Image (cartoon, rainbow, N blue to C red; front, side, top):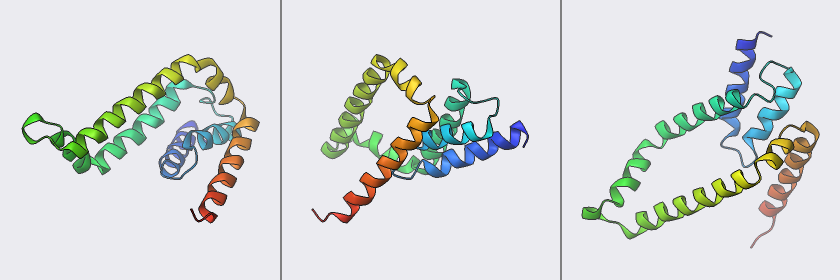
Length: 135
């Protein structure tokens, strides 16, 4: 398969699995390992694919995003929207700090296809059983 077709296929898989309750990045790692293409472990390629997904999400949720930002404008401040934005900011900061602090660890994890596959299986079981528990 040509590099362009492989990249297209990986982009489609990334976009489709983004909305599943398992890691779309893990699927990308596993498929890159399968194809042994020139993008295996290429951070620029991974970021580009995630950027495409991000743009698609922004387009899809554009009205919601606009409503959130309108809700935090001082003239029409909405307490719920303000709370939502503050939660988004806090979780983004925490995630960013963890990502920077453990960068080498996460990069090593995502370069090991076996470990990625095992964590996907574990996540699948957790998701399955939490869905079966009526709490």
